[in-house]
Image (cartoon, rainbow, N blue to C red; front, side):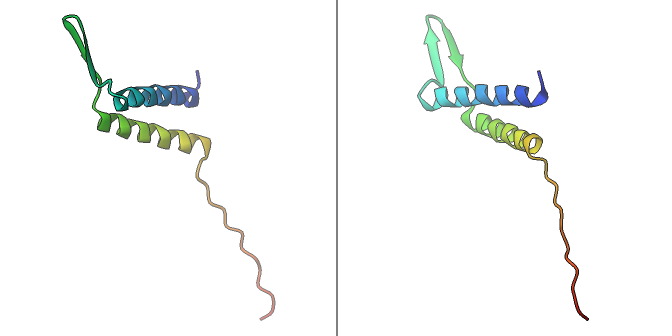
Length: 73
């Protein structure tokens, strides 16, 4: 699996977790067991970091300047 596809897969999983928390599934219980998902702020930060890394891989930043010659003197 390439780095880009792995990052996109991780980002999709984070988005899924964020969506579940936003829809009220932050914490739930099954019998005597309970599950608490990660902090929403932490997930948002991780999502932004992954999005930034994906953008850098997909669109490397390279600036090229084309300078024209002046005519006349």
